[in-house]
Length: 153
Ligand code: SF4
Ligand code: SF4
Image (cartoon, rainbow, N blue to C red; front, side, top):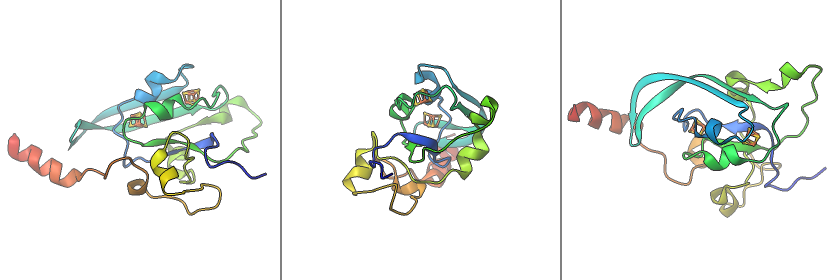
């Protein structure tokens, strides 16, 4: 069945390259079903030190696909997905973990992403998008920032 490009589905589209591990998505989820564990990475960005993610679980069994986690993500790292078939035999198989998020098809919904709508992107028919194609802002040059940080110190 054809779906609208703003359809809010699973698996969630997560771009690790954009994610700072700030955990805003977890804090804003009204059901508290996102679990994030991070450690310092030593990589500096404009916004501060980037966290390395060790755990990123989302319990889809309880998710109501409200999209508040996506709204809360300051770096456009997390997007609603475009799929809708997730039948499983057990509830624990409905928890997606960081490896599944890494593997999930990179076809972000255009919901709450006007920059994708402006391009006329349709996740159901167009090609998957790379991390540098989905943000509101041009991606920061992490290597240059790291070099500047070392100079300042
Ligand atoms: S879509 Fe809503 S319920 Fe589901 S993980 Fe995001 S904030 Fe939580
Ligand atoms: S997905 Fe977004 S809100 Fe969640 S930890 Fe990563 S950068 Fe923060």
